[in-house]
Image (cartoon, rainbow, N blue to C red; front, top):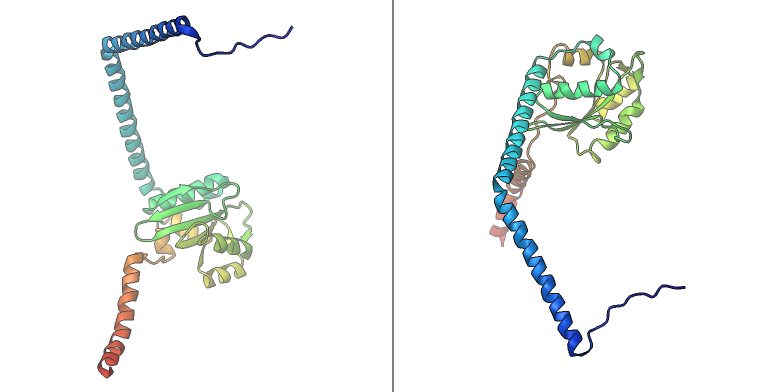
Length: 245
């Protein structure tokens, strides 16, 4: 036997309208009483809520202060960090990428490790107030293999268009083929082989000094300089035209 669905219908007649009004008033009264009860409960319990809020605020401040202290302690440790090539050789691929990130931080860069599958030839991205944005592609090897030109092509194709980098660098604890070095120098893809890595890591020479990265000129400054040069070049010509007219 099929169940009959209950359907609401509009009241009919004076008695039904009166009953509906009584029910509505009762519901409104109940809601108001519940709201007042809740308000009274909150009012009586305000010291508890204030205590909880104060505890949460104190916990947040404590965590922030602790995080700042940990970061400062880490930066102080990195400032004097001089890893040897043997230590870098013993790392796995991911740890090697993180070591390059820490070396950039030691040099005054704000760096992050982004290396993962599909990273588009960027394992570490760094930012510097004077040097701009840098992309590092890490090639760690334990067999002394050489980095080929194919890696340089890939980095060159993604550093600027994808990562908006001002400088692209390929770093390995091994070496590069001759073609890779020549192609990199020609197309401004910097390379750091085992010898340069030793200078960077062990000797503590900043990477931007090692590679002689130029200081970045602000876009506004460059635009103003270009406009000024154009004005100097076109100014006398315009004046002559006005005089001829």
